[in-house]
Length: 162
Image (cartoon, rainbow, N blue to C red; front, side):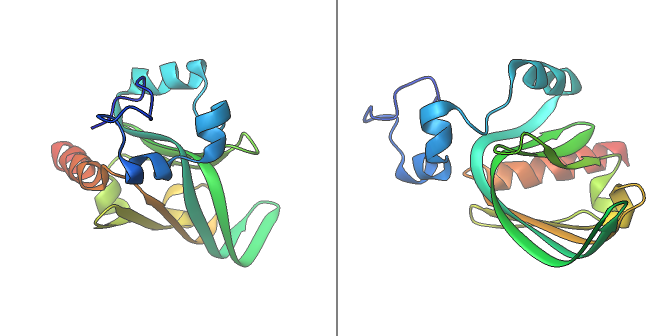
């Protein structure tokens, strides 16, 4: 795997699919990456998976929360996806907001459905299972070179808490 500190132009580090997974804004300006404080907070919880500056899509269906009602909406976003031992966090780069933050007491039993197809990850959940005072269905899709590692880590975490 490519070490991020190396120049992506070096021959031994150049992996076209891995480089293309990062947004141009992240490669040039670091937009979509984590701040030092957020990174420190997440590392104190025990990071299982972290991917910064990536494109992901998020789809809301019949989503309702205080002050929000969305019948159907799909957005392409750039940002970060973080799994710690305690929660799943999806951050938006451009609005500097936390889009989804789910506590992971036992994610696979509670209703977080994860499908891995090669390098593509699809996560689905019902909002009422994880988000207080919210209903509806949420789907997040992103690509990652470590998709199988992510899924295996989540299954291991779920089995250790059972």
